[in-house]
Length: 129
Image (tube, rainbow, N blue to C red):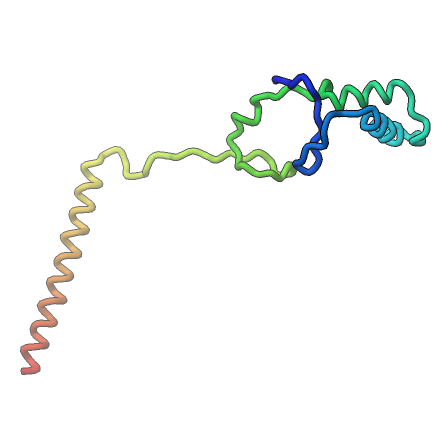
């Protein structure tokens, strides 16, 4: 991961400028409170960790593990990684000729049915005259 030479802080998408000693001290106080001490009981370890955090030294390197994820692209970290599944072959059987013959037969039967209905309609019209 590439890091810029000058660390900067971004707050709500807006840059707040370069780091100051006050920023490091504020983060050191937060670390002291997190560790169960008063904000007034900041030690050098807190300051060193705060400085490292704010300068980006403790940020882990990026990885490509999520890039290969097959799951849904969700921002919800509690959602488990999903598996999209796979396509299975159509179940027409091994013989494609049989499938074609079946489709042709169905088409012929449907055409015969339509012809019978048309013939019946024509007979009814002639009877009305």
